[in-house]
Image (tube, rainbow, N blue to C red; front, side, top):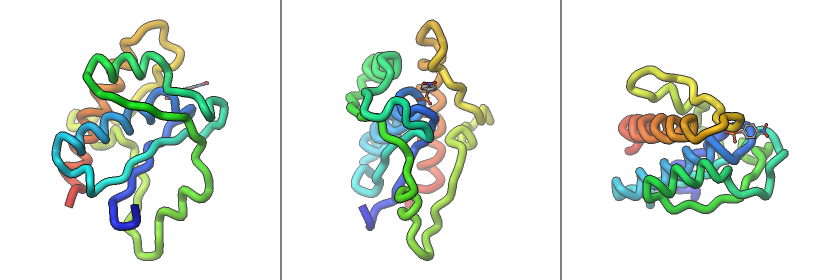
Length: 138
Ligand code: 4NP
């Protein structure tokens, strides 16, 4: 892990958006043949869903896109910030800030009554993870 680029995707509950982003990111680095250069995880700022699997709508969208993924929700903790060793260039970004069309915000789909927000989240994650890697994969 130390010699890899580290990415932590963060949302509120770690059951919808950030697991989607993590799963998509891992698929993209696999497809690009750069999986050995990156370490990715996800977590939530809140702890309500710690220990839970991702929302079934996240899993359904991933499955529909042939992405296998397993995750157990975890809360972001202080130690996560120690991933920024002295001299590191770690930064905090909105994932959506990489969206080529400037759609910065990845809306919370948790309270939606259907899958549309999750489908949209998937597309945004796909575009932004690719744009992020175009810029930062060295
Ligand atoms: P996430 O979605 O932050 O994308 O995982 C949410 C999950 C749970 C809740 C809100 C948003 N919640 O209120 O429990």
